[in-house]
Length: 71
Figure 1 (cartoon, rainbow, N blue to C red):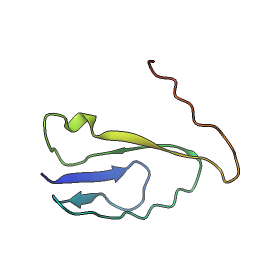
Figure 2: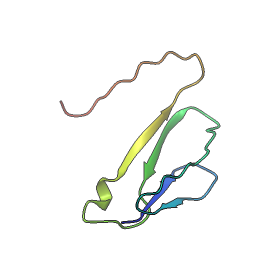
Figure 3: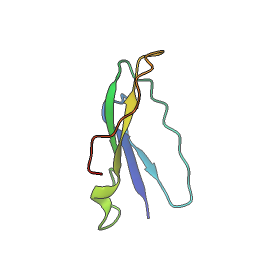
């Protein structure tokens, strides 16, 4: 089943990924932050679950990763 992939804030467009394929998106963030990524092509009943986040920290920041969600 095809999937789409995009990162909020990325200047390039989304990718369409067909079954068995791999694709590469080059993205150079211009500032630290948390950027959502998600599937852009309806793929199944679990489509809304196909998302996550990329955290970008300044070089040398040494900021630890923490999770504040349910335990």
